[in-house]
Image 1: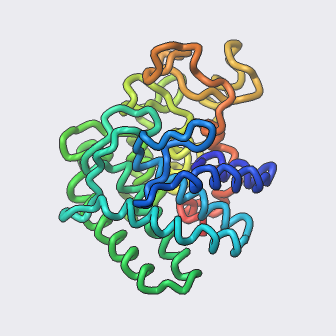
Image 2 (image 1 turned 30 degrees about the horizontal axis):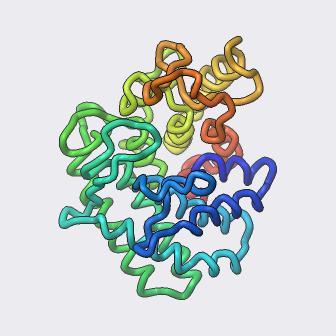
Length: 314
């Protein structure tokens, strides 16, 4: 929904479907505030995903942004606040969330003081500050602002790799993930223009003939995470790089390759160009019409103010 909701909002504006999807998640919210990995008809309450939980909260903020539906926001506020507190409870003495749930977008190795998870948490806490202020909940807004500042202060010294120009996934590895580095910029966690440019350049240096790799998912190319990477290049004011990725990955390969539908975008594939997605055991399972692969739709529409691209929600 972090990709699909903005894409829908700037094209069909089918906000009712967005609201129904969000409702299907909040109907299944646990008493402790945790949101399910998936809503109806799956009802996957047993799978815990720290990031999918946050994506649902972001979805509500996005819905409010494009609809202006104050009544809907107020109807969801108690659940939203409870969900934010569940996520914030994972923050330990380091100032970062220590993620123990493994489920994510089909990446491998989620856990620890993870840069992706903490960047998304930082982003969502800041959304919460805005929403809490709208709800006249100034005490909550102040506390969430402090937690966000703590994440920002702790993440960079712990996880930044200057010699690589990218963040490592967590404190136990040197793996530099696409998702965490994209979100570190998109979330506003990184404020230095030089550092943003370095991340953009380092991500581009890894591109292959079929797009941007996601080494956190073995040999996968993820249109989902690459949609967030586009925002990195726009924020870095490296528009030519963003457009080059769109033209090569989405246009030349995902639309024009004879194995594709020529009208929809695939869920994921291999860096070799094979229609194999590392997280799946069987290739026919790959979706060829996947909402999370539509990143350029909202990036090209919303990132008109390039420097403020990462702040587009508010």
